[in-house]
Image (tube, rainbow, N blue to C red; front, side):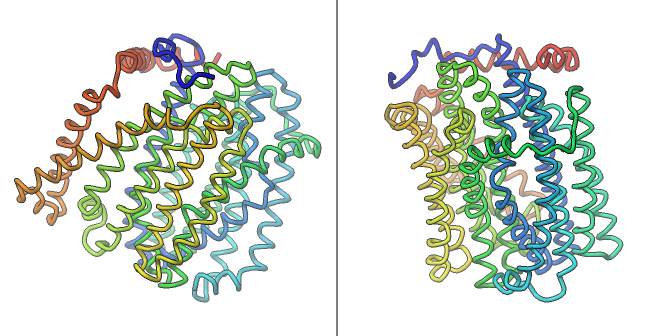
Amino acid sequence: MTNSIPEESQSITFLGDFSKKLATNTFFNFVSRCWNFTVTFLLTPYILWRLGAGEFGVWVLLSILTSSFNLLDLGIGSAFVKHISEYYTRRDYDRINKALSSGFIFYIAFGAALVVLGLALEGPLFRLVRIPDGYSAVFLLVLIAFACLNISNLFLSALRGIQRMDKSSSVEIKMTLPSVLGTVIFLESGFGILGLALNAVAISTLTALLGCWTLKSVLPELALRLRFDGGLLREMFGYGAKLQVSRLGDLVGFHIDKVIISRFFGPATVAFYEVGARLAAATRAIPLVMISGLIPATSELDARNDREKILRAYLLASKYVSILTVALVAIVALEAGALLHLWLGHGFEQSTAFIQLLVIGYGANIMGGPASQTAAGIGRPEFDMKSTGLRIVLSPVLGVLLVTRLGPAGAAAGGAIAMVAAAAYLIWIFHRDYLTNSAWTVIRDAHLRPILSGVLACLAVLGFSRVAPQTSALEAFRYLAPVKIALDVAIFSSAYVLLLIAFRQVTRIDRNNLMGLLAFGAGFLRHPLRERVKIYR
């Protein structure tokens, strides 16, 4: 294979059904992610105010402990999107029904086992992360909520597998409304952290019911039966077991820092880390939407044996994700203090260091996302498995080593270094073993110039702050912080875009793609119902 595709063949004009479906799915994922991020952004200060840093940290730790048990599902959940996508491409409704029925039975049994195992290990786990006594009932409810959540994810995965992200996103958005309402009611009634757990059980149950009803309305051929097909699940297990390593890596990469911090400094310090992590996660949330449709899309292309389009989608996704991610990482790192002050007010200044360290790791992680998602879509999750294995080893080792020298920020630094190393390794082995070319091609064409442009644009912002130091003083006033943020973003964005053009990272092909996307989007927004029917028909 050649190292690159001719430029004229790389254009995505949004005239084909595949491109329209991918763009539409990405749009709905974007709406869902933005909505969920907005809800989290607004709700977090309220929950912190009602619970306090100590109980908020306990809530975060209980969620981590419970989510770790989901790794015992043998990778079945991870395999549903790909396999349902393949069955639906062939219109094999019998296998879709068998997969969903078997998965439903499996997750009922798995949920019961999860609750029993969690209760059996409660004592050792609580001692490990220094959770005080008195939270047993909360832990039980959180376990039940996660058991119900697995069932709801089964139906949402099926919707994503048939590429109806409009429906799966609709379910998620609808359920945030009762979730927020329940949170406020329980906390205002004085239930505290127990109220959050009760609300979680109710919402996960309602989500499962709504997800099932929505899937049935989209796929009338759906028929859940109490029949278990072990052979079909074993087939999924062969694929899902490899993805399970990736799930373990996500758990370790994004949460082991909190466990280490809690072990050394207690749950209250976890609260400061968590608010920093939630703000830093914005650098992943939006770019992640851009690649969220790659697994079902490349799975469909792989079923058609269309390798050229798979490569084209990967290269363009890498390029555009890199441009957006570098900008977000730079802005969040520059404005970490101002954003925190605007969001939570005084008292969380120590979270600034967490944000600035974490955004680097999160940015590297998402820049390796196109390789990860493409590999998963074509049935080659072993690339992600290998890079995740590296992250699983490095994250706790570096976290413990650095936390003893740098304090709580050391855990974040260790996690960030591990993510950068794992992302670089993933891109290298994906190019070596699947694309059979040098990883330098995508680094040169997709990553290098945005990173250089981002660094120079940051220097422009810092230089302006030296020339006009009064603008930095605005950060001290909570409701003037947006003025400082907006000014810095304007300077950064102008410099960044001009540098990208000067370095020829943005080409005629990209302008054509943007104009095609805007034209398609304008038509979609003018007649959303008609266009949805045409695209998903």
